[in-house]
Image (tube, rainbow, N blue to C red; front, side):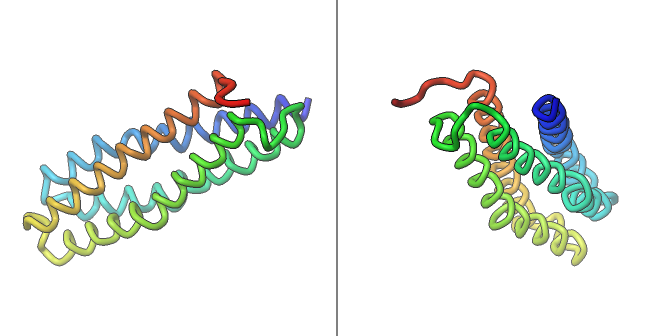
Length: 152
């Protein structure tokens, strides 16, 4: 019973986090094409990250580890190892690259530099990082659902 509850919470947390993340492409396009609401849009995305997305990813990570603990799988199972490594990579990219880019975008928008070449460059880079994060999440979902042998 505990395993089923954990799995449900794990999947719901992943859906909540990833669902919000995937919507950012629309929000970023709206921000770049609508200077009058750019700062508000970017601040809303930042709020969603802090209050909703990051906690959801944290819950997914904790419940994922707990699921392994409660299952017959080992932490050394190849698909488990790859999933954990990719999750950690995703978190590291989000914290060390994506979050600072987001803060920079907001600063540029607030200072009136939102139509500058610098803002557009930061926006393109943030979108590229966001796309890479989406690919990583999709890959992790595939690895966890298909559970391929990989090696061994």
